[in-house]
Length: 418
Image (tube, rainbow, N blue to C red):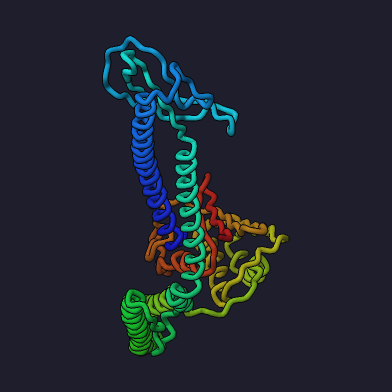
């Protein structure tokens, strides 16, 4: 729900409550005022009727055809005037209508008479009805005014907010710009834009610094590591080394190689997380899996791992080509590395899924941490523990999800479209 619509809803609810309370109050006030005025009219008529009675201008007893005056003999001793509500028949309406009644006693020629005067509420009720419809019409007009005002506000006053929102959607942390968010004539929007401009500049600067540090650190690490590996390779070719020394040099060389590979992998992971692979196109991952399996035939045959391909259905994904190749390579490498001799790999493609199944040892650790960095199963020397974390990051930036299950020694990794 939009902010303006929510404000209008609250305002209309409050306005409706105010109108109901005000309407009820106005009704009771109008009714009281009308009763007071009618009672005044009845009192004046009573004075006129009494004057006529004392001058013997009215033949007694008397009952008017319109039921507004009734004078009858009475034995009551009360001298008080009594006002009350009643109903009379109105010929114009052809029904009973509310009225106000005044009853009082009067002595004429030594006899007591009860005088009853009645005055219809009909005109007064019409006035109350007009007031009700006026209030209802006012409420409807306010609702319509709010509706058109909301459309006007959305088209003009909220324009700076929507421009800011569009700029934020298009903002890329790796693209530094000095333009900033547009200013507006509304102080609150200007304050918001100033804060956002500061945040965006800081994010851009922090990203640039982090990127520069990562690249420099990786480059500076690779240079001395390359020197170390070169020197160790030279030592390994020295025939005067004893077998024990040769093993120690080989261990140092392997460790240097792992550190070099680890630096490159961490840099790659950082680039994936920072969305530096922006080029995307439609790629059939099932066809890419088939190509990579053909390239791995010799390695699979060496370990006698059977491959079952069920890749007739294309699994198309819009993603970066380099990341697609890296994703498939890592998944197949994981299936081979953690497989057993004489095991199998079964790859199945569906329209919305790509499933990798392979035999292997039962998982000893927590399956939830399988995609975490440096998560390793066993003590594989040539594993950095970053393969599946790279897979997870590629899935995150490519609108894919990945799930892991294991049943009876068969490991299953499933890629799905999000």
